[in-house]
Length: 266
Length: 222
Image (tube, rainbow over all chains, first blue to last red; front, side, top):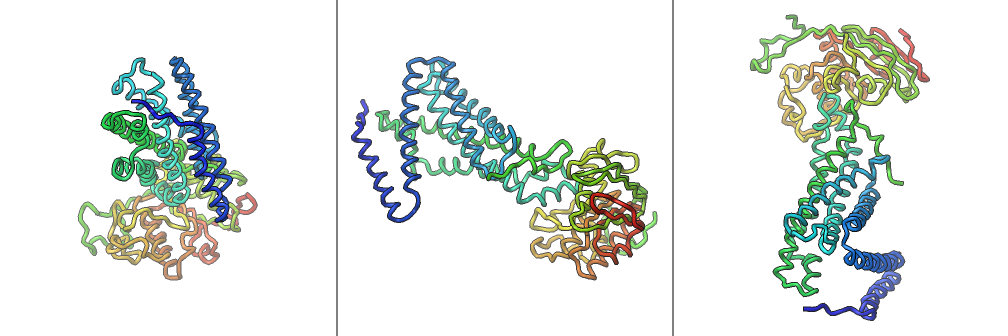
């Protein structure tokens, strides 16, 4: 089975639809046209670049290069988590908290899947490692940023309640437990919804891609199930880690609520 | 055991809920405690003593109380009898040195969820029946909230009290009830009170000593 190769003209035709949308949005005064065009161009350039990088990487499947790309992806995901938050931790924590949680969780689950489930040879085989890690990071990034945003925003809004707990001699865990639970829940809802709707409401992108490239549907489905489980586990662990570490960081060694450790986005 | 104000036999109380009155006779000291632009403060509040803190808004009275409750970073220390705050577990310190903010906060819908050991008598003295435990917090008036917040604090049996304008939002009757409750608690347990108040009449009624906080300086005025 072979893939029908897309020519430049084919992509131009698809791009024509985006241009049409942009014209329509100018006519409707949505102020979105330039954003839309820039985003479309970014997609093109970024995907072409990663395509080139992957091509080179597949040709030189060495651990150091795979790790380098993986760490680069992690760094970008970490930045994305940070900028999406209304109130984030100041200093190194602002970047480090989300990045650390994603590193521990996404890397561990990906390596676990590569070594024990897929069993690629070598385990860092980039054709499997990079797409798997990419999907893990993309989803954990969403979970972690939603959870941290909820954690810090709620702590800010409910500082009176948190301090009411503290003044009554409760520990920081008790004082913030409702908020921590809530933020983990918020981080996990998207993947739970995705799993519940998979196949009925939506055909997941990776599976669609595999089917388009000629993989038998049942094989593609099995990979998609694997991915869904990994994503939910990875997102869950990362979200819990980020919420717990974040909650701890909101209090100092004397169990005081330290909202001054948060900085507000300009 | 002296029980002024309380007659145990008047109420039906299970032994588990028996209200044991301890005379703490404790002494609260502020030792060079300083926060933001306040000069270091030294005040010793003896057992059963009531020290009032007055001063213009924004002078730092609340900050000072919050520092004593160890809720904000500060310099210096505070002590209860011979125990320093800095060497005590924060949760233990805050249970023993009860801080009542001017506005109360509630985390659950039902009043009762905020009380670990509700005492029927204490509720009656503040003008509540124990039915109040089943009330919804959202239905409470400001005055009711503040009185219940005080009650919630007192069920911890604190050995000292830090009061930040505890009656600011209450009507005359509410003010009297809270002052009576505080007075009784202080008398029974012989605890020191550090009381921030704007109300000159109240200061007159409750204070044994008065300190004024102005431009970062604390001085004794009465």
